[in-house]
Length: 465
Image 1 (tube, rainbow, N blue to C red):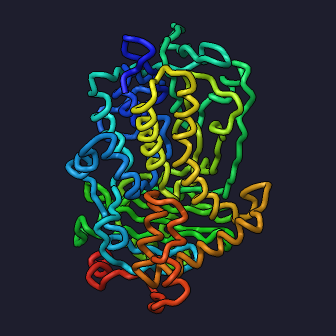
Image 2 (image 1 turned 90 degrees about the vertical axis):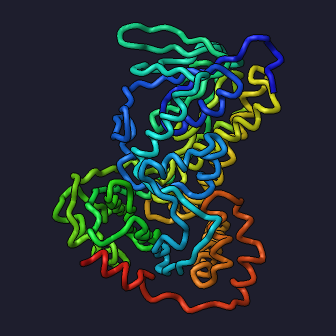
Image 3 (image 1 turned 180 degrees about the vertical axis):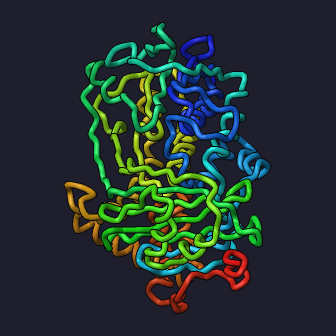
């Protein structure tokens, strides 16, 4: 709706040209003139960039994220596919082993389709769509220093470009600066108590390497996913993503005492030690085309800004600046897009400069954050040393229910669709209590569990020839 507080068009400044920042800018451009500031110089195309080290590892955008992507930027996933990405059918185009060692059956779902490509390609497509919007301007090599304003009203952002420091005044400041966000300190500086924080750190290290895809394998080769078991320390798992440029992006992970290294001679051997060796077997004859990149900063960390007793007008926090998740669950990009759509939906009925709008935006954006947090922490809290607060009896009960839901989904496609609705962040966790899940769980019919990865003979021969 038009902003009724003033006849001029409102202004917004977004800190960070991350996916979260760009999605936020796209959402806000419907209501305001937006300036995006970024401390780095962005690449011109699908190339690695400093400040996003996690981009080198495997990323899969679940169908809930696909829906939000195209809601914010219509046709975005078509653009990704046109530049080499892929829309994969989950579970038809995935060979996946659950944390408790159960292999999922493959079946074609027309509803659940995930984006599969490198993060560099996805970021480049999003940048090209967002930063060409006439309502959005971009300022690089600019560092955010502090908020301007008071405990009740943020009026701008102090920044530095080169040796020059100055203030950018705006009706709304959006912090999408990522894991290194200083929002908590800035708010304390304005006299607002520090927000409650929680960390659940399973101690996962990730190692990623690119390989040339086997010559006999087509672009429709399935994703291969072997998930770690948090109840068997150390937890080890990995994924093969067939991506653009006829390459396989391979990410391996391991928790404390079982971490992968950057040793090129140990990479494939590490994968042979998983609960099933299929990833290691597929890599043994492949030609690597990159060095190994490792990352250790994979903790789940959340700041509960939406629960703050006092919150200033004119300021919100989004993306990794609010919460980060173990990348294995693949929910960060989906949360970024869903949070941006939540911001847009609030602003369609509330003026951007109206009193209390920022608090409403922060609370609306927290809903997908909470959903992804519960999915990640519900598993990671069981890793030894992950948290100072052990899982409660209720959390243990819920975890057992989810394990049973996973086992049921592996034996019944109807139940699997309910599980996918939740994992893809299209439906709340209560979907697991629907008849689609409970009837097969309690009464069947149930097919026997698969004894190995559901690769076809043709797929296995093509990949190992």
